[in-house]
Image (cartoon, rainbow, N blue to C red; front, side, top):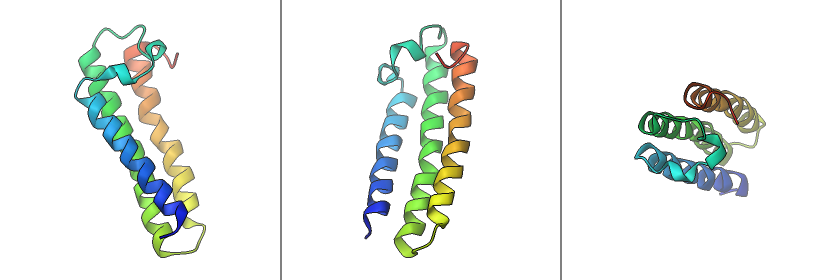
Length: 101
């Protein structure tokens, strides 16, 4: 197993664990200034948890492809996936907090 895929797998597991924990209501894992204006803490936790789990998918896909190939495809998938993965996080922050910060 190459180190790139191992790092991606471990990072994705971390994001999945954090996402599940936040989804279940542990929004204390999110920095306080990201939740200053949040009134619906349950909805915010569920939306942010889903977003983090979704964010981990490109990491898993890239890691799997990197494990089996020696091409630039995993890097491209990782970059595009992470850019697209930030969209639900930003939308959640805008919806529940009125902005990113």
